[in-house]
Image (cartoon, rainbow, N blue to C red; front, side):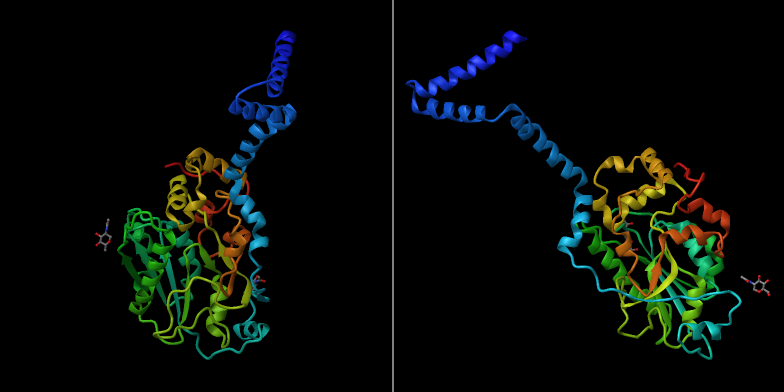
Length: 360
Ligand SMILES: *[C@@H]1O[C@H](CO)[C@@H](O)[C@H](O)[C@H]1NC(C)=O
Ligand SMILES: *[C@@H]1O[C@H](CO)[C@@H](O)[C@H](O)[C@H]1NC(C)=O
């Protein structure tokens, strides 16, 4: 070993001597380069050829986290919301509840229309409709035979419609034919599908001034909140205007009613449903590596209570409309909601000892 080390250093000495000795021009400049490199110590070279590629690979792996971390640098914060405290107690009269919010009470409640785009969230839909059905006049559900990512999908609602007998008389069910454009940004298909729900709403015989809830299935307002809104004069989710109201799924107002519902993007009973949603929804770019979809990894992530896709956008997502969705509250309120507790336990994000999902 000693010998080898000596040999190498001797050799490099030779090269440098060549520079000073007679040699062709090309060989000369080559040798100069080697000389300069020799000037660096070995640690610096190691850093350059090993450290740098590792660093770049690290950025590739965690680029998303880094960009979200740096987000404040390239995106100014959204305008702050005016957060309205939200009061509720089951034994306080509607008149007093309205007064507490500074609103007047109507003689009769407005009609409420609940319009959702459905993909595969059968269990969460059951919870939603159980929570809302005492206060909703008409349910509108739109389902496409294409995922937002352009894959053919079964009409899951049509397959499980039997479960939903309890809303049958108040249901407008619309099917959208997907456009199946290859290689397109998923948000294009998403906005196309959302656009279609305008006509579904018309089919549902909605009238001027009816309240319209437009949300994803997994954004569930509390029933008592909707009840308050339909009785009060001033507040509204969205008051329908013929010819004007189109599907809107973004920030509508600066007012935000605190603690008025839940948002649970990944509340599923089966691992296969997690995989389906991860592949189907518009944020498919967050599924950056195929191992993200491995059932054992998904199960592990659920049990650790970690984020499936490292969704740093959740807090931004959740402040989209008048109703403020609270993710964590879903866990708390699940048991007190009208939906059966066992159903809740099957799908809600686990708190303790209940994190195993059905495989398949
Ligand atoms: C509301 O009133 C009923 C009847 O007086 C009572 O049984 C119930 O416990 C009350 N609810 C709460 C949350 O206090
Ligand atoms: C999707 O639905 C549309 C309209 O119902 C239909 O015309 C089309 O054939 C369907 N496509 C597939 C792949 O099922």
